Image (tube, rainbow, N blue to C red):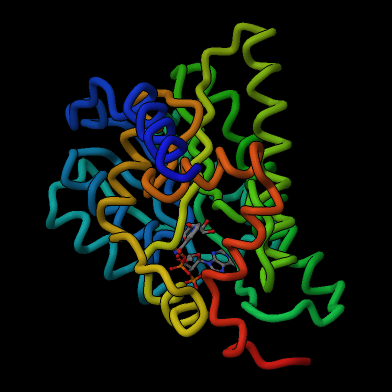
Length: 287
Ligand code: NDP
């Protein structure tokens, strides 16, 4: 069953795959990257800088953002700035977009990538944590999109939403996180329909990521997930590429994500078993 599925998955990937990307597409573009102080967001900032884009970066930790901005300028960014603050507040999310309007008078690409702190563990019943994570991982994405839309309509730009396999297929120990990522798919897929109906030429790319080797992810799950993580540098480049090409969805790494999504529809219970088997459940402490 798996071999034909894998073949079909790869065929789908290459059909909707990288296409005609040129790094020149990003030269001089005005791009916001959230969650840019570490991990995939930081790597996206460096790629964009090398490509000659203007970048506005955001996260909470000012000292880290300062260093990322310095490196972006060294790499050749057309300009690089940051705004620090927490996306737990939709007011801050709107402030970041306002800053782009003030400095650039427009915006070409909005990359929504940040996530709040969550746990890899049995759900402990903390409803407040779910609410806060919804605000950080979902509501702030909605608020930034809403504020940025007039500028993105003007530039016929791109919205790039960084999601996860956990936003398509549920796995254990990530209930609050998974809920926020499923919410992104519902909201942004509905919005995409409305853009088409209203002839709004703003693309929405949903990035479905598997396990990536960022420091935080590796620290949180390496003792539980058996598979090896994919490289954050390549992941970051694929996200930018898929946004610039106005792809509907990115699967990265395609070799694991695409077959997983095919199995989700064809054999959901079999997939659930594979997901649990791929984990060292004994390493999770019981509540
Ligand atoms: P990291 O944990 O490395 O980075 C998260 C970023 O978000 C940091 O810049 C962090 O900076 C920022 N952040 C955290 N809390 C807040 C907050 N309250 N307000 C504003 N910013 C905040 O994440 P990754 O690079 O691993 O993940 C990036 C994206 O990729 C996420 O959307 C994630 O869901 C997705 N993804 C990652 C996978 C992986 O295996 N790494 C797998 C699947 C999806 P600071 O602490 O300074 O605020």
